[in-house]
Length: 337
Image (cartoon, rainbow, N blue to C red; front, side, top):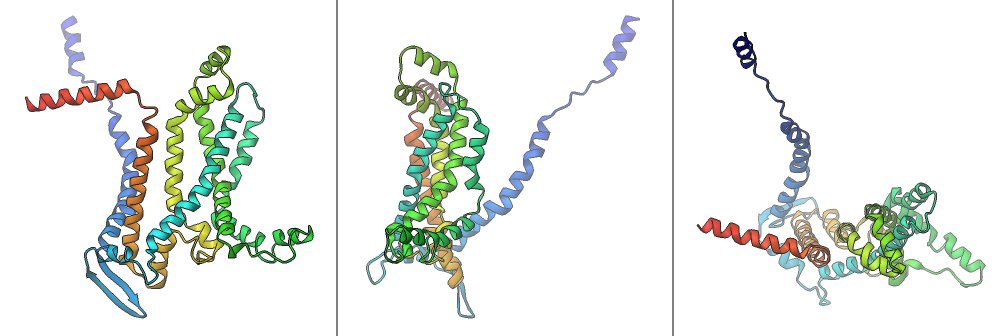
C-alpha cells in the first residue's frame, strides 16, 4: 500500500512557478523605448556630425562626408578672434552657477529646518506643496511672466518710479548683469523646491538615534550638520548636484523665451543649446548641430565623472575599496593560472 502511494506521488510532478521571466517582461518596454527614442537618435546624431548637410535657401547641400570638419569649424576663431562655442559654454556655466549656488544653499537650509526633530515643525505637507509649486510652472510661462514684470512698461519699473527710486524706466534687458540675474533667479525659483524635497527625503532616511546621541554628547548644530548629516546625506547630494549640472548644461527654455532667442545683450546669455538650435532654425545644418550635440554630451560626461569622483570619494568606505582591490588581484591571479 505504501509503495503504491509513493509511486502515485512520484508520478505527479509539481512544477515550481518561476517569476524571474516576468521581471524581464516588465522591463522590456523600457529598453525598447530607450532603444528607439534615445539610443538610435544619439547614434544618428554622432553619425550626422561627420557630414555636411544643410539648406542654402531652397537648395539642399549634402549630405557629404567631411570627417572632423564640422568640429574644426566650431573651434575656429571668427574675425574678432572669438570662438563662439567656448563663449557660449562660458555663458552656460555662469548662468548655471548663479542659480545653482543659492539653490543648494537654500535647499539644504530648508531641508535641515523642516526635518529637525528639535523644532518638530508641524504642517510639513503644506510647506512641501508650497515649496514645490514653482516647479510645476512651465519654464516658458515663467519666462513670459518675468519678461512682462521687468519690461520697460512693466510693474517693476512702475513701482520703482512711483517710489522715486528711478526717474525713467530701467531697461533690464540691456544689461548683462540684470539679464543673467533674471535667468539665474528663474532657475533658482523653479528648482530649489524639488532639490529641497529630495534632500529632506535623504535626511529623513538617516537614523534619528545618531542625532539624539550627538545632542546628548554635547554636539552643537554645526557639528551635527557637518559630521553626521552631510556625510550621510552625501550620496543624495551628489545625485542632486549631478542632475542639476546636467540640466544647467542643457539650459535652453528660460533664456530662449526671456531674450526672444537672441541671448541679449550681445549674446551674453546665449547658451550652448541655443547655439545648437540656431543651426537647426536658420539653415537646418544637421552636421554642425550634431557636432555641437556631441560636444555637449562629452562636456556633460566629463564634468559628471569629475564631480562624482570628487564628491563620492568622501563617503566611499576605505575598507570596501581595499576589499574590492584584493578581490580583483585574486581574480587576476586565478585568470592567469
